[in-house]
Image 1: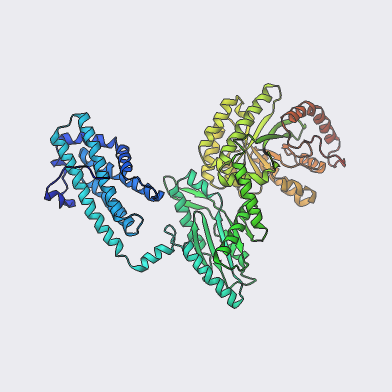
Image 2: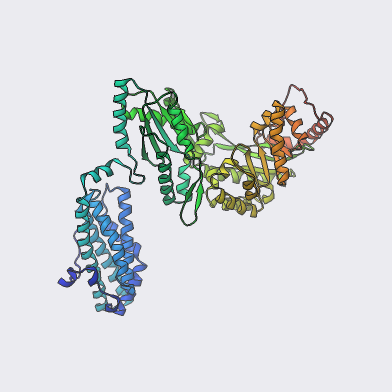
Amino acid sequence: MGVPPHPRVGAEATRASPARLAPVSELREDVHPLGEALKGRIEDVLELTVARTRRPGVDAEVQSSFEQVNRRSTTALAHWLAGNGPDVALAAGKETWRFYGQLAAHRAASLNEVTMRCLCWRDAVVTVLQQSAAQLEISPKALSQALNIVQVSLEFSLVEMSKSFDTERERTDEELAFMATHDALTGLPNRTLILDRTEQMLVRARRHKTPVAVLFIGLDNFKGVNETLSHGAGDELLRSVAERLDGVVRDTDALGRLGGDEFVVIAEELSPAEGPEQIAERLQGALKEPFALTGEHETRLTVTASIGIATVVRSSGEQFLRDADIAMYQAKWDGKNRHVSFEPGMQDAVQSRMELEMDLRDALANDEFFLVYQPTFNLRDMSTTGVEALIRWKHPTRGIVQPNDFIPLLEENGQIIEVGKWVLNSACRQGAKWRAAGYPVGMAVNVSARQLDTDEFIGDVADALSESGLEASALTLEITETTLMRNVEEAARRLTSMRDLGVRIAIDDFGTGYSSLAHLQKFTVDALKIDRSFISRLAEKNEGEALVHTLVQLGKALAIETLAEGIEQEQELTLLQAEQCDSGQGFLFARPLDVDAAEAFFQTWPKNGAARAAQGSDAKGSATQGTDRHVVTA
């Protein structure tokens, strides 16, 4: 596409330098309205420039950078024309010249292309200024001066860009080689260099018959950091993680970043006392202390990592890394924050899991999810206090998929936010229906870490209550202790906002995380759900009873309800009642029930519950030895 005619300027303007750009005092006052008009048409200039320079095959990141520079240059020129002086244009121009020069020197874009983009930007600005002048009835002299300034700005930019290009090309071969083999964000070796070093390590291992290992490190839930804080915060976190990991690897090992949230360590000179498992534990230990991220508000963030280990020497570095990568994904599926060694069968498991994930992406749209409800009880009189909503997935060919098989995938790919919103809305609607039908039960809904990472969830809760008609006091949001400890300050702030809506907050799986008394007071929760792992230890007499006693007394000291999860034995119920635990749920009373079974349960339980309460009163201190431990099953 040819360049349209543009106003010519004299030799003086062509040889313009920063000191000779027109100061504010030399601008006609009637030029200023053109600057103000240009401020409002920055996107129009971009659209015209993109239309004239559009071509296939341009890297998306490079195109995005071109567009950012276009907006910045137009904004700076608009401020100059509006009477703010040329200094702001010079500041923006320096960054533009440097960026374009780097692109050309590093062959991300040709010098011809960046020059063409500069000319097309000039033409787009000219078009917009001419249109604005006609609309505002600006004098020809004012328009002419504005167009001259555009031309001066362009020609000066081209000269400086050429200087930047020459400077970049003069970089030493060593600097360019470093850039080609190292990660720009962290300075660590990139995939190219790590693969080369892995190949060399494998050669030595085959020659000397020495053990070697690759450890593939994937940060857990890193995508949520970018989504909820910012990409800048994500970059800062990656740099900090790189520094921590680099501080604990041995001198004989090599640490690299493969991209995204993935790092790798290649290790040789291994021994029983310093094997890959010990290295993995040291790497995970380096991440235990929270990271302090600066920004608009300082944020403290706890990060964990899943690590895959490969130790079987392969024919190529690519295969060796792939084995460790597969093991890393297995570690994530096993619950994250752990290390797993590669086994041959994992390849099939990864393929199967990928197919499951593909099916999962369509499950919500295909209406394949449904809810079941597990009742909770007042352990004093055995009356029903509410239900906990639990998600299930019925696939057309797989049948019922267990929650442990698909919920981690929802967390990993981010679907948990959309699916969690569906669960919240569905549960609130069902809770409102039951209460309208005369069943005064509360509704408890589990909240994922990804949901709690954003303020949007507060609005989701308010909308669910408003649309369903469920009273806020009838809704309990259950949040795991580990989720709350990821970002204590932000979690506390969001919990306060949700409690202001009138809903109840419960800490799920209490006792399995790392919260302290101070944290509990900061979170201002309504209930503690004692994890099943503690309840099952009641059979261990002294130790189990002491643990539960401590947790129940902590709840009483803070005036917080205690609810025991996973009660399965009569003996467990009796001991919990003796400890004066407030509430409970478990298979001893009822499995998760569908809607019809739950309504039948609400109708029959008052009589059964009263009988059980009386039985418990008569048999206090002893366990009933019945053969059928489930009152109601589904």
